[in-house]
Length: 134
Image (cartoon, rainbow, N blue to C red; front, side, top):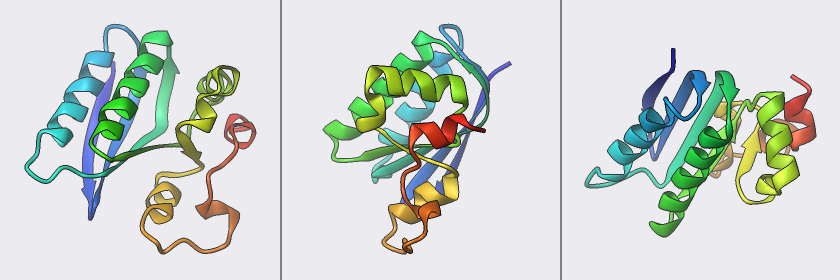
């Protein structure tokens, strides 16, 4: 079973994914993104927390890219957090790691966008290599 938990955080929204993101469940991701972007004052930073993501197929990757594109059109930013190794490998192979920033945790992704970033590695985008070592 797949679910998306939407958590607003100041100027950002966090979408916490749980379960398997595939061609059946990608609709839920798109609906959550639609709900965020259709608000009168939509969040310009969206962090997708993949901590509890168990699987992601090509439809799921396409859904993530769709969210990225929709945010970009409105001047927003998408960041991914705690990406599982299999998804991180796909991002590396396709070059998406250079388009969508990947962070070790949702908190690190939020801090990086808030101007409160310190110089530690935790607040900078993790390389896909590091994310895939989980």
